[in-house]
Image (cartoon, rainbow, N blue to C red):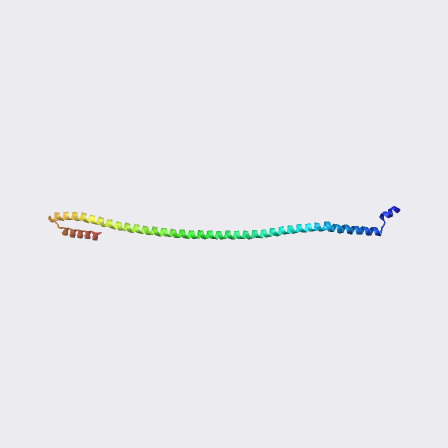
Length: 168
């Protein structure tokens, strides 16, 4: 068993040497492994943080652009609505102008027609007057058996027309 005690036994120099070896390995690992790994992890973390910051910045720019485009779209919609409103007003104005022009033209046509009717009426009356005066003068000639002058004929026609006008 003596060999077993040596195997499990506690030797302070061995323990101290083992502790010193452990501290030395830890110091070497810290210097050559932990610091570079930690530095690499920190650099990678910084790179990731920069990417996130850049992404947030780009997102903020995109939001600004979106808001700008939305504002432009709203301005364009408002301008289009204004153009449509102005076009409607102009169309109404043009329509009113055309209607007024048509009314004026219709009024002028009606007045001309009334004048034409009046002239046609006068012409017909004059023709009737001439026909009646001819018939009346022929009748009067036969009745009087003499020739009637133009003055007598005109007077007789006027009297005859007045009597017809009174009866009508």
